[in-house]
Image (tube, rainbow, N blue to C red):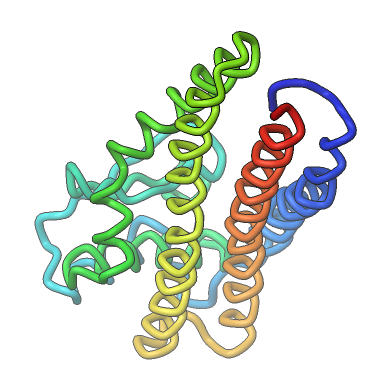
Length: 226
C-alpha cells in the first residue's frame, strides 16, 4: 500500500467490504456447521462420490491443516479438504466439499475462465512480487518508467482477481445443482449450503474491489507525483 496519504480514502470502501465479507463467511460457515445433513455423509465422502460420478476416479481427496483451507490443486489434480470439512457431516462441510469438486469438474471440462486463470498464474505471481519493488523504487528515485511498469504488472493481479470471480461462482452453481440432483442435500439443507457458498463468494467480490481500488490509488499517486 506504499504509505498513508489522502489517496488512502480510495481503499476504505473496499477494505470495509473485505472485512464484512470475511466476517460473513466465518459466521455463516459456523452457523451451518451445526446443521447435520440428514444423509449423514461427510465432506470427504461427498467429494469422493461426486468425483467418481464425474469420471474423476484418479483425483484423490486429501486432508489438509487449517480452517477453510480447502482447495482443488489443478497442477497435481488433488482435492484437499480441511479437517472440519473432511470429517464433518454438516450442511456447511458438504457445501464446501461440493464447491471444490466443482473446480475439479471445471478442470476436466476445460472451463474457459479457469483455463485462462491457470495460464496466467506464472505471470501474476511475478507481477505481484515485482510490481511493488518497481513502484517503491520508482517513487523513491523519481523514475516514472519504473512506476509505469509497476502499475502494468499490478494490472495482471487485478485481471487475475476479476477472472477468479466467475470461476468461483460457476463452481458453486455446479455444486448446488449436483447436490440437489443426486439428493445428497434436501430443500432446507440446500438453502443452508447456498448461504455458505454465497458468503464465500463475497470474499472474492471483496478481493476484486480491493485490487481495483489499489490500482486506482496507484494511478492517482503516479499522476499526482508527475
